[in-house]
Image 1 (cartoon, rainbow, N blue to C red):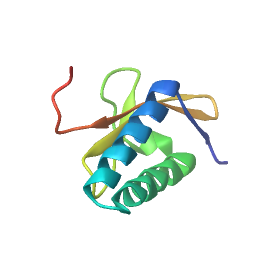
Image 2 (image 1 turned 135 degrees about the vertical axis):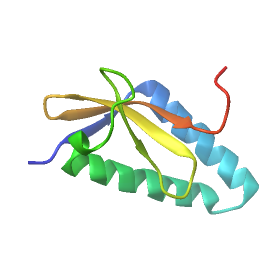
Image 3 (image 1 turned 90 degrees about the horizontal axis):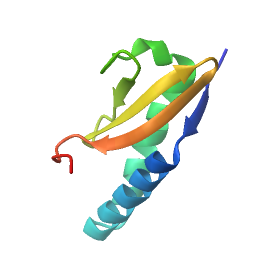
Image 4 (image 1 turned 120 degrees about the vertical axis):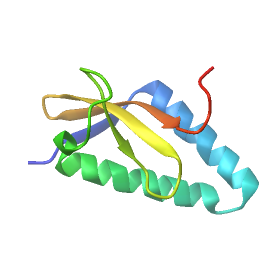
Length: 92
């Protein structure tokens, strides 16, 4: 059984902003970030329960190369990504 991975609007905006920032740093780097995020999606499609809780409701998975975590919850057969956060920046 595979899970469906869904993104909330905020998570989509965060990915778009991160992509643009990395592309400004070096052409192609944004694509590399997207590839890493896609690897996380694949892991979540297979076994989202594998990753640790950050509170009683939400879990997280970290990208390997880039300092990002995907914060998500599991609802039935859906993995809902609520945020894709840079872990080295201070929150606003």
